[in-house]
Length: 259
Ligand code: GLP
Image (cartoon, rainbow, N blue to C red):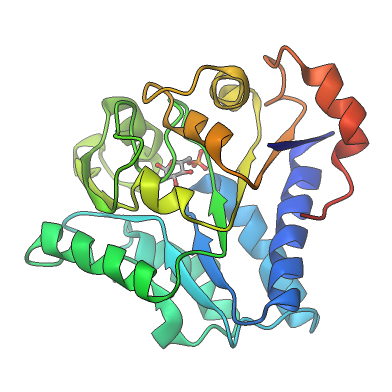
């Protein structure tokens, strides 16, 4: 596990955007695993800027998002489909036929989850998987106690996750209770994983992810078993790491940003 600690959130975001851009420059037909959440908005803004500057094209790439809320159609403002169009897809040159999210409004969500898993397998699995981190250590919507070998399926969201996402809805009661999410096993098949977390509110989950036991109590901790993971954090999110000085010695100032 490569741990890159940056002075602030902006530098951590730049680092992750650089890693994605480098991957697509090197392998234009990359299969990207994309994430949502407030953390990623700044990353996508950097990707849009890089695309507008002519540094990168997504025209040959394919994307699969981690998750979607059950019950929401792609045009619902609280859906992750909507988020992705607003923050990335409407501003870069992905072929719309090559961008994928689960359909939250599918008549049979379990069949939709199985279809989505099969589509990822058919694409040859994810090349680079981008991840955020929930306050409780979730990745995608794999809440604590998720099977560490799970595939894409329906998960019930915890109250704390619904509260963290309530800002995107008029009322807390409007936040969906269920989501379709890539499983932990799905994520673990990715060639490489880049996880981004910043801010003091993520410090406890970051410490559990990097230094805690591998446990379904902190689903992100399974990344300790992955061959190629880069965890990109800022100083605030690094605050509870026991071996923080060691990580800073290996990669001073979080650099260089190469996988
Ligand atoms: C959400 C998403 C995750 C995301 C996480 C953190 O519930 N399903 O993919 O990484 O929670 O969100 P944020 O970046 O807003 O802190």
